[in-house]
Amino acid sequence: MSKMGEKVAYLKGLAEGLGVNAESEQGKLMLAMIEAMEAFASEQEETEEKLRELMEYVEEIDSDVSDMEEALFSEDDDLDEDDFDEDDDDEDDGDGLIEYECPHCGTVIFFDEEAFDMEQEHLCPNCNRKIFDEDPDGEDE
Image 1 (tube, rainbow, N blue to C red):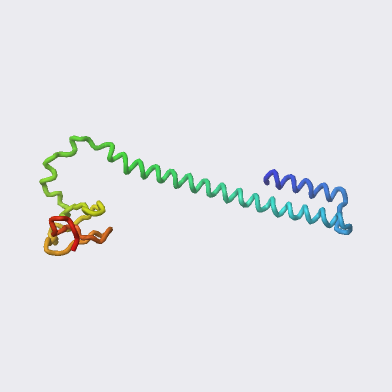
Image 2 (cartoon, rainbow, N blue to C red; image 1 turned 90 degrees about the horizontal axis):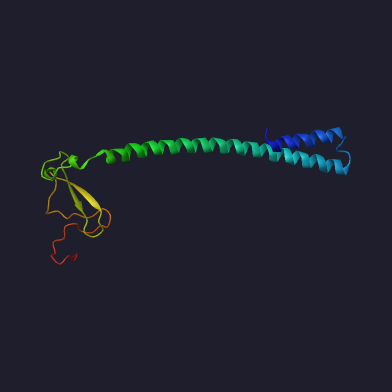
């Protein structure tokens, strides 16, 4: 029971001890006020419990996100410059993709190396403009 609940219980006991009853107008008012305070105290206790549960849940999520960040970014930190060889760009990395940056918006696009055809019109999925402009001046048709 919270402090507010304890204080309301004390007031209720005090009212009973003083013989406050619903027969007089003042008695009706005091008993109604005590009843309203009991409802507020009960709501406050429920809210505090929900808040505690929510805080625990947020702490769990924060811990999970921290674990994910550590797993994702610690791998990058573990890589040395020796892990990258300049000749690796010339070798087939096995994924069969061509990486290209849109000259208009900078979006990085991947094309299937085997199915790629320069005769086709390739549009950027972000800005919907031609990626490979045939016009040497760089103007769209």
